[in-house]
Each structure stands twice: as structure tokens, then as C-alpha cells.
Amino acid sequence: MEHSPISPEITFTHHHSDEEFKRRVRKTTILLSVITIIELAIGLTIYNIHKGENPNAGLVLAFKGMVCILTLAKAYYIVSVFMHLGDEIRNMIMTIVVPLLLFVWFIIAFIYDGNSYKNLRNKYDLHFKETTMPSKHHATETPAEKPGGKE
Image (cartoon, rainbow, N blue to C red; front, side, top):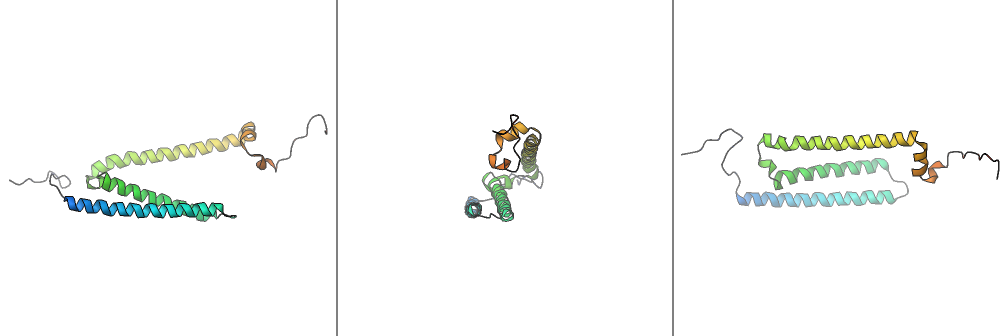
């Protein structure tokens, strides 16, 4: 008696052999190691650019973008292979990925809101600005004269 699949996505047969899975894990481990070495090299490059006299902000931003893309690629491979999400049905994948995307949006929204709060506080609360800003930023401002005249 042969079992027919319940749906095209759901079967109870074992698709992968242990040898195939070991080969896949080995390949993914090597790929993750290479990506990590590339990320470290980019990080060292960013560090050396910042140590220079005239750091190129555009180049640093491009390198940081590359690190973000490589990090997302590593996260994809880790979740797909080591957490076995790549072998799951589409609905199970969406059950995990959609809340994760909402969590990422949540973090971005709080960072944006915090930055807005910081900028507004620096603009409207002058006492806060005086106590938190380094003195070299106040060099362009003219000091107020003391009420008692010159001393």
C-alpha cells in the first residue's frame, strides 16, 4: 500500500539522505565563513578610513550597506539550513518570516522616533543643549555680556 501525499506541499516521505544533508551543512558552513571573513575585511577598511584625515563618508556608507547585505545573506542561510526552515511548507515559513519583518519595522520606527526626539530636544531645550554639547560646538556663538559690565 502506497501513501499518497495529502497535498503537493505536505508529504511524509524523507526527501534527503543524511549524506546529502551533511554535504549541504558543510557547504553552508564554508559559505558563512567566507562571508564573515569578507565582513571583517570591510570592517577593518571602515576603521582605517575613519583613522585617516579626510574620511570619505560616501565610501563608508557604501561599505556599511555591503555589511548589511552580507549580514542578511548570512541570516538567510542560517535560518534556511541550520534551522531547517528551507525544507518547510510555505505557510510555516510565512508564519515565522512575517512577524520577523514586523519586528524589524518596529525597531526602525523606534530608532527614527528617538532621533526625532533628540533633534527636537536639542532645538527647543537650550539648557539641555548647553549641558550635552561639547564646548567646541559653541565657538560660533557669541557669549552674552555679564550684567555687571566688564571684568
